[in-house]
Length: 99
Image (cartoon, rainbow, N blue to C red; front, side):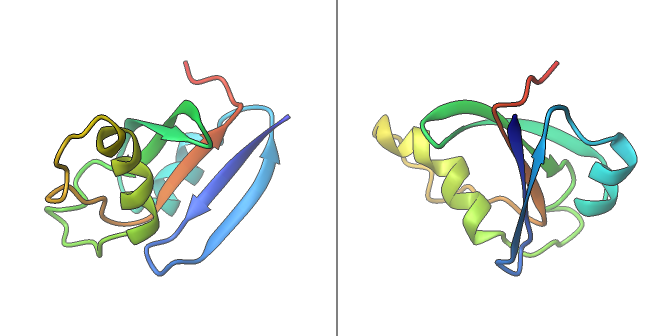
């Protein structure tokens, strides 16, 4: 069984056990718009993080926790990603197949 991490831009987090992705309506409600999959390294495994595809344009607040997750792998490779941020709520998947 996998886990779904709902990480809000205010720093709060909810974790649920799951075998599959949540339905589109639930995803788009939580991230406040259309989703985009950003591939990240989470708990030492490559996975998808759903973000709001227009988070910057909509003026959504920076999500510090999601930004750290997003920057982890590039920083390990010596890349400068200090100007890259994730805006708004996100959903991260652990051990759930992404199709």
